[in-house]
Image (cartoon, rainbow, N blue to C red; front, side, top):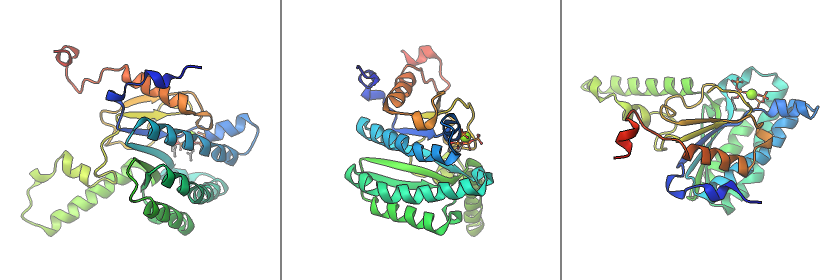
Length: 249
Ligand code: IPE
Ligand code: IPE
Ligand code: MG
């Protein structure tokens, strides 16, 4: 069977892909099982997407794993998700090492249960020297939280240095104060499960990102689905405010 991978142009491969992994609950419902069963089956999709991105040469992959709003779910589900994270991290660190993948996390990690936070920080430390690809987990993350934190840190710096001029506040300064400092903005954002919203994800960083929505539920998402999204992305014209004619002269 031919793969869409053959149609991907390496010259215009996105450097950074962001994903909203959605639809675990509905997938479980389709299989007449509890929601947690969907989350467990979502791990395979995480593995597939990570491996596919590394194989293609994508430099950064950011996965939305838990939003600040997800604390509002039933306690049983929240606890199960946190436990699943610890389990998965301890199991997968070896694979990350073998594949030379660096793990990072964005979000308010201090509010995670201590065991989850420990497992995460350990995995980050263990993979810190890897350089083939960076896998970023957005955990207890929301874009409004991140932007609020950036504002606080900028204001606090300005208070300490009274001679600073307001003109020093620009895009770059804001970028540098976000949790994604040093990471290029994603060129492509993929959301699974048919929902067409951003759900408080990377609001600053996706100002010019191409959005791709698929009805596939996250636990069913495989390498071929990723290739399809990238091929679709590569068929688009990214104009950044210019006219199409300007781009072709
Ligand atoms: C995404 O799947 C996983 C998380 C948000 C943690 P959902 O759990 O949101 O699945 P649906 O949207 O209810 O189907
Ligand atoms: C977004 O999914 C968050 C993650 C994928 C972790 P949700 O399922 O929580 O999003 P909404 O609330 O339906 O928009
Ligand atoms: Mg959902």
